Length: 318
Ligand SMILES: Cc1cc2nc3c(=O)[nH]c(=O)nc-3n(C[C@H](O)[C@H](O)[C@H](O)COP(=O)(O)OP(=O)(O)OC[C@H]3O[C@@H](n4cnc5c(N)ncnc54)[C@H](O)[C@@H]3O)c2cc1C
Image (cartoon, helix red, strand yellow):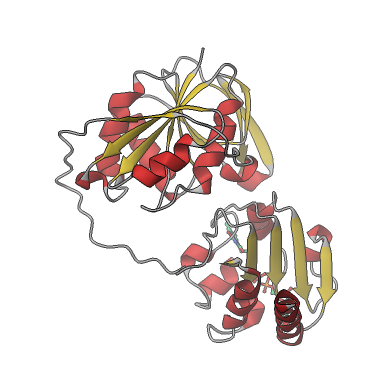
């Protein structure tokens, strides 16, 4: 039987949707018994949320001031110490998970698999390569445990309805003298997180300046969406780097994706392959984005987007 440990991802208040998606991945491993480890400080509500995920057996809580920030240097030795009890250790393939799990692998001197998009057997997995243009099947020969990050865009979130036990664990000897927390600069404010948002509005080079990029935020606010950007918009300084969607940005799978003034370059499309509905607004009818779009509007975005935002806003009021 497989014993799977998932490292929870959270912001100190809420359990991230990425963890629920890791649970779905773990459930694809035959006979999996699933535990979730929550590291943090004051994690009671987060552990309770994890315990409600359907399919979870047990939640292990590691509550300590030293765990208040998700520093990989601090968490990795704790995860490595736990790993011996498990056949698999999973973390989301997010900035946090991609920081943490390689350190765990190094401490255990074990290989690690990145971006699991499908499980073929407890030791055989599929993952994308070449920016998603090819899929690789990877067999893990003898790793114990199997360490893997989960491509969250490939998995639905596990639903609520579980009732796992919560097991508070003692935390001792946590120290990483070479690493200290300085601060967190988050640009998203109260907006949904780009990587797990159900709706995303992205802007491209066509926006023309950081001031005009505010139009993207305006539409996003009307529909409660996260904001994304093409690399051209990021490189030009219209949007911060952490909003970049695509091969060298974030891979996302929203239910609704608006591409405003984005041409649809292959490197951008790689990031939205799993988006359910793509809406494109572009003034060039031959733009490649229209080949992938479910709904397309050939129009000047500076005219179309304010009209669309106003129409959606008045509809929301009625
Ligand atoms: C190794 C590598 C990695 C890369 N990684 C990424 C990545 O992760 N993400 C990413 O996005 N790109 C990435 N790129 C860059 C990618 O190739 C494109 O250059 C980029 O996506 C183009 O951004 P864009 O669509 O905003 O700009 P453009 O290609 O310049 O397109 C702008 C579009 O706006 C339209 N337009 C102009 N004015 C208006 C208007 N007023 N109203 C409506 N439409 C208008 C134009 O018709 C055009 O289609 C990568 C490239 C390389 C080589």
